[in-house]
Each structure stands twice: as C-alpha cells, then as structure tokens.
Length: 296
Image 1 (tube, one colour):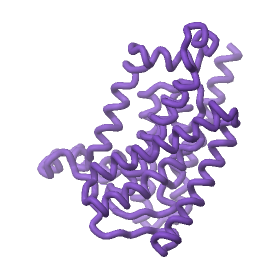
Image 2 (cartoon, rainbow, N blue to C red):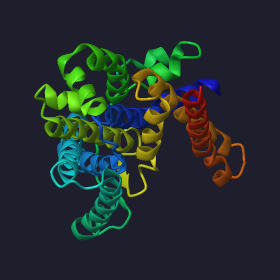
Image 3 (cartoon, rainbow, N blue to C red):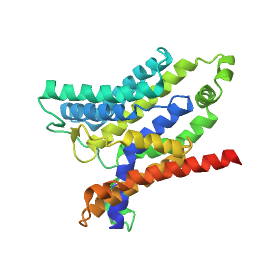
C-alpha cells in the first residue's frame, strides 16, 4: 500500500509543482498570478487536441507550453500596460478561459464538459519497467515521466537562477526594489511580462501532465483547483523553490492517500476534503508564524 501511495504521490505532485514554480518566478518579479488555473485548463485542452492530431506527446507538451505562455503574456499586458488590478484580472482570466473552453467544446466538437479524442499519445515513462522491482521506491521510480523530471529539475535549478544569474538578480530587483530597478535602467514592465509568460508556460505544462499522464482526455474540471493550490504552495514556501516543492509534495501525498482511503469504503466527499483542509491549515500556520515574527 505504501509503495502505491508513493507512486501516486509523485504523479499527483507534478502539475502542482510545475504551476507553483512558474508562479514563484512570477511572484519574484512582483506579479501575484491568480490566473494559473486558466493556463492549466488551456494547456490540458491543447495537449489533448495536439496529441490526438500528431500522435506525439512531445509536440502536445510544447503546444501546451506555448499556449500557456501566450495567455500569460496577454494577461501581463493588462497589468503592465493597462494598469489592471492583478487580482481582479487573474480572477477574470479564469472565468474567461473557462467560458471560452466550454464554447469551443460545444461549437467545435459538439460535446459538453468532456472531450475524448482518438489516438491520444500519453506521456512515456523515463525508466525501464524493471525498476518497479526495487523495494519501497520502485513503483515511484517506474512512474516517472518527462514532465515530472522537468518539474524537479526546475526546483533544483531555480535557486541558482534566482540568486546567481543576471536574469535572476534583475527579476528580484524588479519585485523587491522597483525604485532600484528603475535607477539601474531596467525595464520592469518587460521583465514582469516575461515572467508572467514563464508562469503561463509552466502552467500549460501542468495541464499537459494532467491530461496525458494516464487518462488521455480533457474535462472542464480537470484542474481541480490545482492552480490555487500552487498559489498557496509558493506563499507557504515563502517564494523559495525547495520549501515550495515540499508543500506541493505534501499535497500530492495527501491527495494520493485520500484516493486510497476511498477504496476502503469511507465517504468519498469527506475524504476528498483532506488535502484542501491541510493546505488551509498550513496557510493559517504560516500567517500566525509571520505575525509572531513581525511582533518579535
């Protein structure tokens, strides 16, 4: 049972982790991206369509990344050029994209809610099936796919990128000290637009992972609030990649556990509340901790 939960945990963590890493980069530049959910849904839909049309999971993933990045860039323009409130704009984007997807499904495919297409290529496993024989961690290693590897690689690379590269230093200056950034001649708007496109691209990949891991179809409720969970994760992780990743992993583990508990005959709706309740509790603890730190 433990091996099954660990294997499911690593898979369920990936879309949250991808969206959280993109949102974290965006947050470092001063943009709070509430619209991650919209990019996840758009990425999932495009991934299914492209995968069915081409038979390639790679092209489908790249298409999801591109669509997420374009939506992210357009979203950034409303904030940087149109002076829109980022929270209101993000919520509006979620509603707009959800409505647009519903219209596309009805108009183009004659369906409502769920899109099933033939010959959808799923994500492959990166390690041979024989690794599943390794005790405890075998099934988890056997479940690894390219986007999961990419997600954890980004966690490992981001601390260096943010702290030791020119791009990272400019990005952090834009978010933490905008006056200094302007004094240095940095174009804060372009940096914020670039990071919002990055967040959109990562969220698009998160959608591709949701759609192409095992089910190979699109559903309007596929994201399941993971964009907001990712938002909570990098806030609780205080915009640091590894703590944020641990929060994402915690949610993935809880999500896998509640799925396993449902097979034991416990009420599904009650069990399904566990991951979200734990995230809410974590955010409350983080808020209390910050207030005590400020008081001290």
